[in-house]
View 1: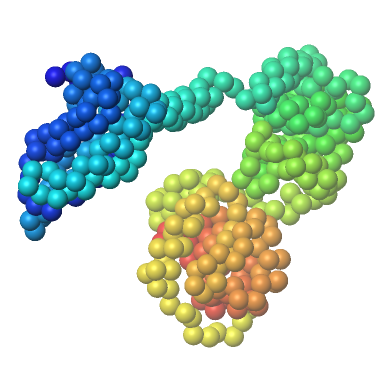
View 2: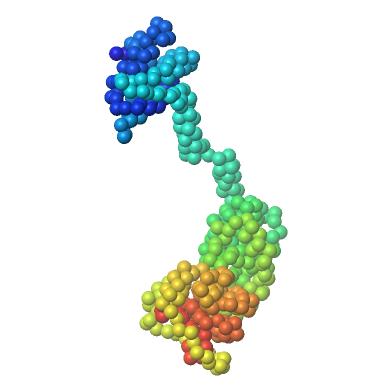
Length: 415
């Protein structure tokens, strides 16, 4: 008996069969061939169409329940639309299969080419998406890459110390002094062509010379290293203005908006020197403890303090295990950021601020329960915490003894 490959079929006839009795699959196929014989003429005789391969193998799937047989019939066809429709309609004239009454209903004639076309379209979408993601760069990426290469080419070596600098150093009346080459590149990326790098910790003679001729803004990272560079610069060179990146950030990673904001908020060099002179220096042991908290139990160095009168003592709130674990996790995340988190009684974060702004923030918040910060607990912040009814101060170390205040003071070695 001839067969038609599913690949070669153009249409597939789908039909449901409902038989009032129990019959086998050969009975159904025999009824289809027998009861349509001579109905459509010689050109559309079912047996001849199958022998010539113009219709494929008839698939019959049946199941019997409670004495009745139901199932489906599938017939592949390579005939044209009209002929396939005629063959499908002819099947519906069958009323008996074997000794039982039967009903055949064609539910659908599937155009195989449409199904294949849908599959091709979906697969083409997947391939195109993959090609775009992996092999076709975005036009903006191309532009950025070209612009970046041009910016790198624009960097010049300035002065006898061959310092990295933007191309507009000579013609600009104002210049920006930064720490390294990456800072110059980032400023150049955002349109600042008048930056020059110190390229180290000591201030080169080239920087000292250029500071005497131009209006200079020192722009340093928002960390302790930035403070040291400001101190060095202001002591040996004529620095007009000073500004810093946000706490915990470096100039090389700032966005254009952050750069403009930092420059707008610059302060005079004299003010920067005054602020640094007021900031207490950390001892070498404090720096070691900052990076190696496990060594804190070995020693505590506390400078002599002026007599301090605490607020009237009240019953302290005991620290729970939940609070202790939360404080420990938050303090670990804050190490190196010089930042602080202010929490309510449910340990939800009310605000995140630099350590230098904690006191101001506490004065504007009414329901602060705890403050976790990357720094030393000092008398000024303790006093403000008492006034704000804060229950816990959690820091790296403490310069205030616990019996001197009603606020619970917690250091990293206690967590």
